Image (cartoon, rainbow, N blue to C red):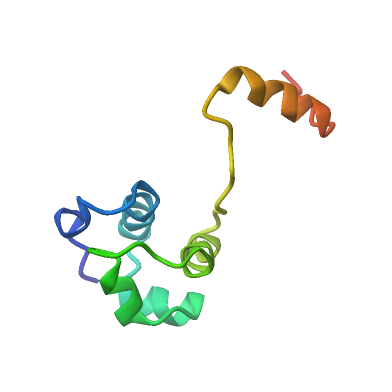
Length: 91
């Protein structure tokens, strides 16, 4: 299968760049992702120059086994939030 040229997505949102990298790692074409995630392939091609709808980006990430999440920019607060929701690291 043909890989997606990441240079065509170099000025887009970092989340789209990551999705393109994931798709290339798994040899998923835009046509295949469109069918798998239920997102129009024309919409995905437009992500080169336009920001995606969050629901479409999330659907594609979910199809790759990932999710879109809101995380703090200051990671010191992140660990407090993780503890607050009850997650404990087994390390």
